[in-house]
Each structure stands twice: as structure tokens, then as C-alpha cells.
Image (cartoon, rainbow, N blue to C red; front, side, top):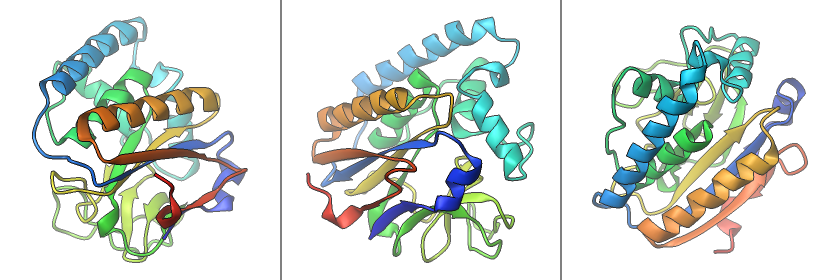
Length: 239
């Protein structure tokens, strides 16, 4: 099994760096008050940090994603990257609810660094996991959904042999591969586009790795994928 980025993605999306965290034999059960406290801390940071902007869309870490959505034909006024969606939820006065420990931790990192993050259960992935342009006929059932909502042709998606696992790059996850309390082995991505630097993506990736080790046990490793390193063999990861 490989995780790879289609080289054509780099032609349109300059300075793409994706931190990839792999977990094995994870304990994702239960709820942690310490993780909940981290989320409350991150929510407070968001309220303070975004008070200087008339709109979340003006934050320097959100601007490149809105530009990216336009490039692959999705209106960023209607579709928000996952980090912008989280921020908007908080600014409306809502708290980020507990899902499971892995999701809670990556939501915390997403809010702290204002970067899109997402995760999939590796045991539910069929074949290779690829960041690619959609053909338009792939199967996709959104998180919590029951109906097929295939992507548009040319849309940037994460997909495997069975279908799309995340639409509009980082807009909506699939029900089929979602992380649950039963998840043992997972892949989590931390995404940055220029001018977001590789250094920022690496810092977020390392911090998430350390948090998963602390709160979920198991074995955890990470790498950075970019134009110079566009694929990795998942099954050969050295933990």
C-alpha cells in the first residue's frame, strides 16, 4: 500500500507540503479531559487571533486554501477547507465536541496552527491512497451520509481503489474510512500551501505525533510529502 500525490497536483499548487502521521496499534477508546482542555485552550486562541480580521477568510493560513479551491472549480464562499470550517464554528460561539481521541487531537492541532487536517482508518483503505484529480465517477458517501455524492471532474480529492475518501481536497470526509474508537491503524495528514512553510507543517506534524504517543499509545511515525518526495510505502513504515 502506498500513499502518493499525483505529480500534476504540484503543477497548479505551489509549495505543497503534507505532513503524514502513521499510527499502529492505537488505543483510540474513551475520552481524555486533558485533550478536552487542549481544545478549550485552542478555541480561546482562535477567538483572540481572529479578532483582528474582518473575516476568517483574511487569515494568511486560510487565503491560500481559498485560492486553491477556486483553481479546481469550487467556490470558497460556499465550500470551506476544514480549518476554516472549524474556525467559523468557534467564532459562532460553538465548542468543538468530542469525537474520539485521534480526531480530537488533530482538531486541536488544526486550530493551533490554522492548518487543514484529516484522518483515515488504514484498515478501511483499499489499495493505494492518492491525492489526485477526480474523474467524476468515483463513489463518495460523506461522513454521516447514505447517498452517493460523486465529485466533479477535475476536483482535487483523496481516493483509493473503492472511491473518494475526502472531497474538495479537505472539505468533507467519507463515512467509509472515518476514524472511530475501534481504529487501530490510521493515517493523518497535515496540509500546507505556499506561503505556509514546510517548517510550520513539520512543527505541527511533530507535535501531533508526540500527542498521539502520549494519549493513544501504540507506535507512531511521520514524514513530509512534497514535490521532491511525492510517495511513501505505508506498509514499510519503520515504527
